[in-house]
Length: 235
Length: 272
Ligand SMILES: Nc1ncnc2c1ncn2[C@@H]1O[C@H](COP(=O)(O)OP(=O)(O)OP(=O)(O)O)[C@@H](O)[C@H]1O
Ligand SMILES: [Mg+2]
Image 1 (cartoon, protein in one colour):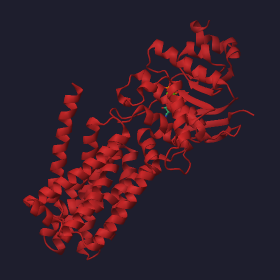
Image 2 (cartoon, rainbow over the protein chains, first blue to last red):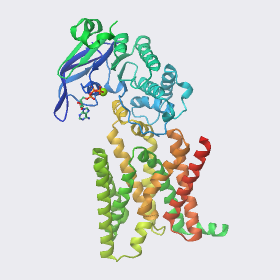
Image 3 (cartoon, rainbow over the protein chains, first blue to last red):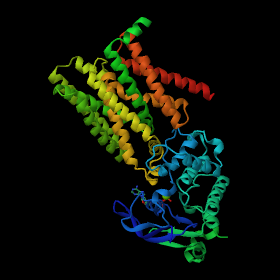
Image 4 (tube, rainbow over the protein chains, first blue to last red):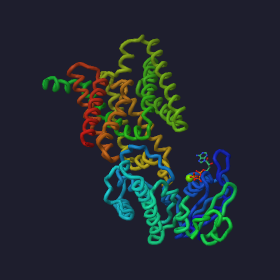
C-alpha cells in the first residue's frame, strides 16, 4: 500500500482552479521531487497533502497508518516576525507539538526527539541562540530539525534550499538524502534546482499550467518533456 | 515613609487594589507577549475602548458593571480578531472605528445619566476605590482562570505564535488558539480597566513584552521576564501613587516607561 496518494484531485482558490484532476502515489522510502514553474501549484499541492486545504474534487489518501498531522513540514515561507525571541531549542521542540495529545507539557521522549534532531542537523552548539540572530542556512536547518521532530516517516519540504549559497545548499541536500536513506524517511520536496532533482530524487512530479507528468526519474528523463525541461542540466 | 507604607496595607481598598492589580499585571504580561509578537496590540487598545463604552452604559442602566462588560468585551474581541485576520489594513481601520464609536457611546451615556463628572474621569484614568468585595472575588477567579489556561496551553500558544502554518499542519487548530488569546485578553482588560483606567490598561499589555524583548533571547525568558517586570512595575507604581497621591494607572505606566528606557540602555551597553 502506498504511503500517500492523491486520487483525481482538483485544487482551487475561490473557484479558480490551480491543479486539475491530478493523481499520483508514492511508497515508503521514495524521494519525490515536485517541479514546475512559479504559480503552477506546487505549494498548493503540498498544502493539500498536509490536509491544510481540501480538494474540491478527489481525495488524498494516507496508507500505512500515516496521519496527516504526523507529516514533517518545512513551509516555503515562514512569516516569522524579524525579531521574534525564540531559541533554537524552543523552535525544534515545538515540532513535537503534534504528539502532545492531551498533555499540556512535553515529556522526556519529546525532548529526546528534539535532541536527536539537533544532533542530526548539527546545530546542538547553537541550541540557545536566538533564531533571528542566525544565518539563512542555519535558520533552514532549525526548521528542518523542527520538521524532523514531527515525523519519522514523511517530510514535505517546500523549496528548502531557497536563498542558500551553493555550498550550504549541497550540504542541506546531503542531509535530506541521508534522512531518506539512513532513517528511511520518505521525502516530498518542491524544488527549482535542476541538479538537485537529478542527483537525489527517484520520482518526479512535474506540474504545468494545464497538465502534469508523474514518473520515475529515468522515465521522466527519457521522455521528450523531461529532456526539454532539464535540458543542459542532464548528465 | 515606612510608616505610611505600613499604613497603606491597613486600608481594605488598598488590599483589594493590590490583589487585583498583581493578578491583572500577571495576566496582561503573559498575554502581551503573544499579542505583541502577533502584531495584535491594536486589538488590546480597541478592546479597552469598547470596555469603557460598555462600562459606562452598564452604569447608566444601573447594572452590574463587570458582569455586563466581560461578555460584551469578549464578543468584541472575537469580532476584532476576525476583522484583523481578514485584512490587516481594513482590520486596523475597522478597529479604529469600533473603538471610537464605543468611546462616544460611553461618553454620551455617562453625560445623560450623571453628567460629565467623576465617573467619567474614573473610567478613563482608573480609580483604586472602584473595586467592591464582589468584584475582587470575580477578579481572582477570572484571572486565576486566565493564568491557568495560559500555562496549560503555553506550548501550543508558542507553536501558533511562532508559525501558524506549521502549527496547523501538526493538527493544532491555530484559529482556535488565536481566539483563546483574544478572549483571555478581553477578560484581562475588563478586570484591569476600572482600576488602571481604560486609556492606560492597553499599555500594560504592551510594555512588559516590549521591555523584556530588549534583553531576553528565548520565548520562555521573555515570558518570565515580562511577568516579573509587570508585577514589579505595578507594585512600584501603586506605592508611588499612594505616597504622593497620584493617579494609580498613570503612575504604573510611567514606571513601565522608565523600565523600558533602562532596558534599552542596558541593551545598548551589552551589544557594544
Ligand atoms: N491563498 C491563496 N489564495 C488565492 N490564490 C492563491 C493562494 N495561494 C496561491 N494562490 C494562487 O494559486 C496559484 C498556485 O500557487 P502556488 O503557491 O501553489 O504556486 P507554486 O507552484 O508554489 O509557485 P512558486 O514556485 O512561486 O512557489 C498561483 O496562481 C497563486 O496566485
Ligand atoms: Mg511555492
